[in-house]
Length: 219
Image (cartoon, rainbow, N blue to C red; front, side, top):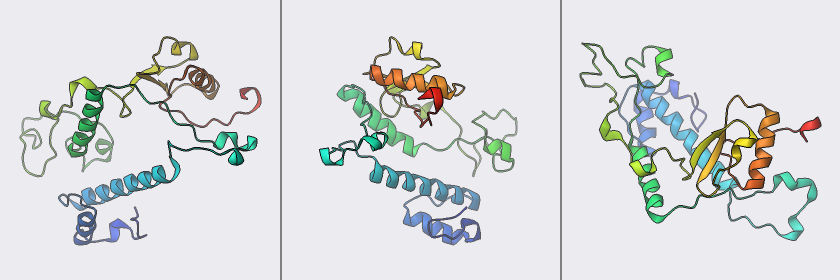
C-alpha cells in the first residue's frame, strides 16, 4: 500500500500517519491498520475527483471543426438526469451529507480474521460480546438512529429509482424521467449490447454501462 508520495504507509510510524490524516482533515483515532485504511480510502476518493474534474464536463460543446467521424465514440454525451422536485433534491443533498458522517459498521472481531473484514455487517449475539456490550474501542452497531430520510430511501445518488433488467424487453414501461436500469451481473455482452442500444433509443439511463468491444455479429 503506497501513499501519494510513493512511500508505503506500512513503513511509516503511527505519528507520521496521524500527521497525514490531520493534513487531510480526517479522524486520527484507531489502530495503525485503521489509519492506513483511512488514508487509502482518502487517496482513492481524491483520485476519482481529479478524474471527474478533468474528463467529465456535462456542459461540453463541440465545434464543427472538432467533429471527426472516426472519433464518434470519443464524443462525450451528457447522461440523463432525473426529473425531481425541490424537496427531493434537498433530501438527496442531506442524505449525502449524513452518509459522510456515517460510521463504517464492522463485524465482530473483523480485525482478527481476514474473512470477517471482507464480509458485511452481522449483529453480535454473544452473551459476553464486547461489541454487543458497547465496550470501548469497539466499532458501533447498526441502530435505528442511523436511518436516512425515508422519502429518498433506496434511490440512486443521482436521484433515479433503480430497476434491475436482464433482457431488452424489460425496458418497456420504464419511465426515463424517474427510473434508471441496472443490468444483471450474469448478462453477457451480446444481450448487454442489445440492452444498451434499446435504452439509448428510449432515452433510459444505464447505471452500470460498460464499454463493449463489438466484433463480428455484435457490431
